[in-house]
Every structure is written in C-alpha cells, then in structure tokens.
Amino acid sequence: MAELHTCTDVAARYGVEVITVWDWIRKKKLGAVKIGREYRISDDDLRAFEDARRTIPHT
Image 1 (cartoon, helix red, strand yellow):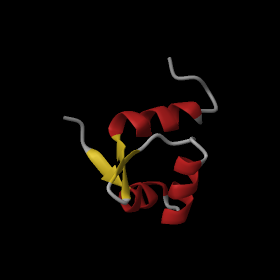
Image 2: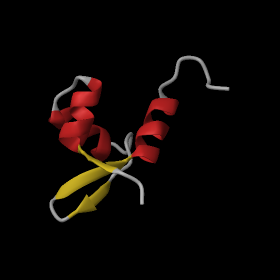
Image 3: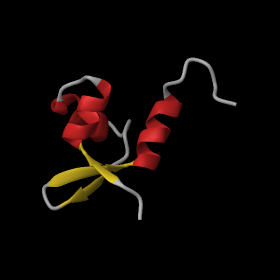
Image 4: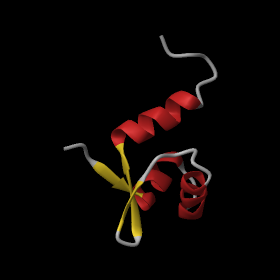
C-alpha cells in the first residue's frame, strides 16, 4: 500500500500554509483521499502535482 501524507506534511514539503494545500485539493490541482474529516495525499498524487507544474517536460 502506498504511503499517505497529511496536509501538514505536504505543506511542510512545499513551504506553504496548510490552507494552501486545502485550496489545491478544493481546486482539484492536487489529488487526495478524504478519510473521515481529513485528507490524505499519496506519493502518486504528489508526483502528478509536481509533473503538472514542470517548466520543462520530464523525459
């Protein structure tokens, strides 16, 4: 099973506030799974998020 990260983990990774991560999820820029009242983000979703923002396509 893939590791799931909290919004706090993702915010720390990118140096942003947790509310920014919530906004990315709400705007469907970042995929997430809602478990109870909290979101969890998979490694695959983080990779897709980063790939979508590359200035030069990854080959």
